[in-house]
Every structure is written in C-alpha cells, then in structure tokens.
Image 1 (cartoon, each protein chain N blue to C red):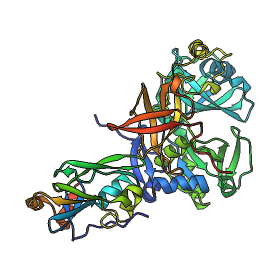
Image 2 (image 1 turned 120 degrees about the horizontal axis):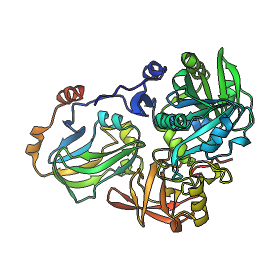
Image 3 (image 1 turned 90 degrees about the vertical axis):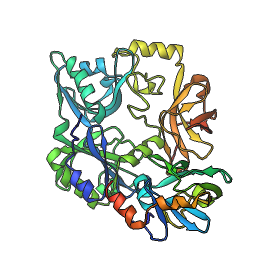
Image 4 (image 1 turned 30 degrees about the horizontal axis):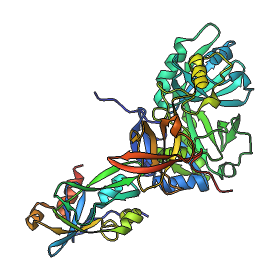
Length: 350
Length: 131
C-alpha cells in the first residue's frame, strides 16, 4: 500500500537548509541538518528551533469543556487559571495512556490540547466519541504551525520576557501574531510558539534570523532522553500505566478520570515493574527492544551527546528499580553493564 | 567535522559500502564516505578480535551512530592482524577521515583472487548513483 506523506509548510525550508528528511507519524520531517550532535549541543549551549507543526492541536470549547476534560484527562484541570497549562494524560479504562499532551486553558470555556502527531487521530477520535452537550471538540491541527525554540539563550534571542513555566500568552514576534507557550521537550529554558499555518514560514525565517540553529527529530530525541521525558509509543502507551511509568505526578487520583480506579489500585499495591533511566557502564548504545536481564526491556536508548556514553530508559522489576542498581543489557547477543540512575540522566552544571 | 564526499582511486570498493587498500598480501579495510554519511556521526565501533578471521561478504563488526547501527561487511577474507584503536576510542574519526585515520581493521588476505570481484572508484560511484 502506498501512503502519501504529509508535509508541513516548512518542508522547502528544511530541504533548502540541507536537512535529511524521514517519514515520521505520517509526515516527511527533518531528522537532522548539520548533524544530531551539533544540533543537540546548540540547544544545550545557546538556542535551537524545531519545526513541530506535525503535532496535533485540538480545541475543546463550551460551557462544560472543563468538566468534560476533567473526566477524561489524568491531571486536575480545575487547577488551571486562564493563561496556564499542564502536562496531562489521556487514559483508557485500563489506566493505559492513549496520549500524553499539554492542555492549555485559554478561558474557562476554551481549552487547547497539543497532542503527539502519531496520536492525533486516536486522541481526537477518543474525545469526539465522548463529546457531550455543552462541549465541542474540534481537530484544528491543519490550521496551526508550531515551532519549539529551546535553549538557555532562547528568550534573549527572541527578546521575550521571563515567565513561569507552563504559562502562555499572545504576542507579536517580528510581525507575526503568536501564542507563546512556556513549554518544551528538551529540559532547557525556551518556548513553543504557535501561529496560523500561513504565517509559520515567516515565523521560522524570523527565528532563524535571530540566531536559532535549525534542529531535527534526531536531536529532539537525544535531548528529551537526557532529561528522561517519556516518548509515547516507546516508553509509554495504551498498555502501560502512568504509575509504573513514573508519571503519577501527572495523575490527580482524587479526581474521577477514565481508568483512575486501576491507577489507584496499582499505586496502592505498588507497581510490579517501573520505568527507570540508566547509563551504560561499558561502551555500547542501548536500543529500544533490547532485553534487560531479569525480566526487563529497553524502551528508549541512544548515545548521550553531553555525557558521551550510552543512555536509556526501560522497564525493570521494581526490586531492580532503585538508583545504583546494576543492570545487564543484551546488546545484540553481548551482555553489557548499565546502572540505574536518578532522573534526569543529564543535569546542567550550575 | 565530517569529510567532503570522496572516493579515492587507491582503494577498491565492495557494493555494501566498504573499501580495501591492498599492500602485498595485507589489506586495510574501512567504510566509504557514502556509508558514514548515511549513518551520521559515529558514536560506537564494535571491532572484531585480533587473530579472528573475517569472510568476504560476511560481517566483522558494527558501527553505530546516534540513530542507527550497521554491520560492517568484509570486502575480502582473511585474518585480523590489527584493529584501529583510535576508531574504537574516537569513532568520529571515521566521519572525519574515512579512508585514512578512520580505517577499521588490517587483515592478511587468504585469497587474493577475491580482489577481482571488487570495484574501482568509478564503478563504485556508478553503483551509488543507482541507490
């Protein structure tokens, strides 16, 4: 079966900048421009820009929007004020994770959910099916462009004021009207900027002209893994629960969302296995799917550009999940030693 | 810093993007510019052990970038005489100088007639143009 890949409005910009394009979540996306390690270091030291226009945006509006989301999302959405946002999970009846997302409260009757590109259809379908009187769910993914500008010099380069994490506000950046969100997926200071789809080329050009290094999906993955942000589809999914994944902090178990009863039980009993970060003690690069001796599995693995060693995350029996526990990973038939560490794997020296 | 694209004439090429530089009955082996470029910056090289044997068209090691791992295919058969420790310690040297300091192993060839099956730089360029 031949499937046509979608392109973001920045496709020509990426190709023109020498990006290597790969299929990702139904889109042709840049995996790297100059090189994953250079781009990674640019974000840790200065400022990088990622085209994340492939991500999904879902509007949930109406007088009952808040109640509707409170019943479907794991975090306590009632804690949000206008202009605030939170990391939250869309859960199924088994307590599994349909998607992890950020919910932005525009006003009490108007929320924006930014979902993973690969889960856009699943998340929208789940919400739409449950739409009730007083709430309208609308997939607006094709109406918006989204850039992530990340790194310690991001605000300086964009001439934006400091603001608390997980807040958002409208602004005009080099003539483009944008929603500036104090969120990201790299562990660095920075923003995610949303704009109408037709303006995203101008916005990209403006951000690059201000000195942000174009970065691809390769660096996005190494950056998020160094700070232990889970990737849906690898570390978490419909068959993994938030408690075992270490995402209990994003679950308000005193609210009644889908699957909350299952999660309360897992929390009370203690999970049988846990998602842990680890660092290789021997030269080897762990990869998704590699067995961990004693009944575990690597869910994400790469080479850390900052630490120059193999790093990863994986599920291990709870008894093996405490920091400093030695793990043995089967790297294509060879046993390689690793050590469980505390989150995050990489922490900036201050 | 990655090297500029090149396919020197002093080595012979295997279609799986490996090269051999022959000196008497010995040969130095490595991966081509095309192979290192496709992989991206290398972060790990898993070499064979000295004294082991490699077989033409068989794999003798692994090279790994941030995103991918690839088997290294032997263009010739023989006994491993030496492993490039610099490529083990600093795999990026393979990106920087794939035909020079970024060599992978040195072997004593067991069958020099295998050389007949390998390609010249021009033939290899034509081969990758089809990829």
